[in-house]
Length: 289
Length: 319
Image (cartoon, rainbow over all chains, first blue to last red; front, top):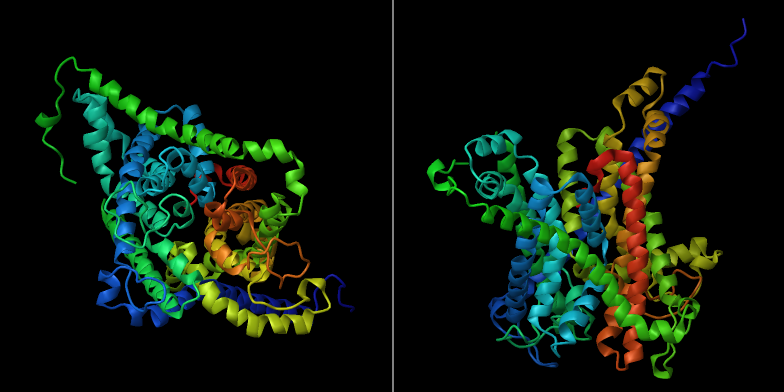
């Protein structure tokens, strides 16, 4: 009896199995290739940056061109200052916006506000720098820490808003109803019951947003500008780690390259620390009932 | 969570004012988002008005960029932005989708979680650090190893001809690819997870091998969503600034060779904005910013629409 032409030959079946196995291998290789850059970057940051992390790096100002040594103390303080200012804008607006979306907004208005927030998230960071330059640098006749902090703060608003909304809607409706039944006014229900229940989630969202903007360089180029000295006044230009890394990295001096790597290592450590905080916070939240 | 004592939050009778004030504050904050969008667009328009009126539409396809002669054209930057971003997509989309397939379909739980964490960490690395690494580690390696090999094996294509500097369009494409891989992978993962298990079971029941299941049941089902993920990655790629500025070579030229330096919209703004000495120069840079904003916003909206139709309301969770 002849074999049916529609049944696969054993060779073909083997080939199909072999192909499936080969592609499985390719998928594994792709996954490894995707995470390899992370380890390469961290390896080079540590290899080239850690030897320059001494006391001077954290306490001294940058030395003038040509002189060896110096540090990035002002840039580290500058980054912390800028992040504080950004949080002062991004957190209240973001959290209140999230409260509106979760507690007050109609479906229709929420759709458009969410849409706007997503569009705003996609605006390239360099464009934020140009916009703030026109609004805050030109009228006040100078680059300033304010301009840099506000640029970063505005970038934070849509991020914080979306995460706040997401955790607020997770608070069970029965909490709100129970509080309302006691005759507590709406805003107290929201602040004392809803927001307080979701506080950890909101904090997580804020830290994620801070970690996101801590490494931003482009919006600071035309706003905070950078500074080789201490800035004693927020109306003056201020330095920041990313700005200093960029400037030193592009410079022709080996000593500055060395410091750029050290600065990058410090910045990366800061961002990793923020991310690990988030992980710890959200692990607690998951284990809670 | 400890419950607050009820007495402290009982209302004083008849006080409606704080409630409505609170509501208005919340509405104001949410409304600010819309105001911000209008603000970004209008400020860029105001900044670029001079250049818009002087050059008109010709700005977009003039390829001359000579600030000394007051001649400004956007074409080399538009070219550089699109070529570097498309290169990045060509590299990142297959890798990202393959990784997402691995994570959703194959990887055991113990392997999956560490890889997901590593990818999230990769997303957290700032652009300027990728730039530093790209400039001092990746570009020298490309110049000495990968590029000569490519030229040797594929040199008959115009893409891989010409002198090798290291700093190049291809280097920028590779750096951008690394930077957009996390978002493409995580969105693809969400898409693949939304493929119903019935699809897979049906294919297995027909005797399909593992790869055939992925191809017939999973990938074809998820095709549209994966396309949306790629477009979202494109939106990110177009606006990348710092890392690209540090590895692309910053030369406003249009060259067929991927080994040649290029320039992008975002990086010319980063480099030349503070040095722009005349109003027209600065205005032209604003117009470049306006072009960049328009393109990224359109691409992002397209991606959102595609992903929303695929996954329902949860799709806009774009971390």
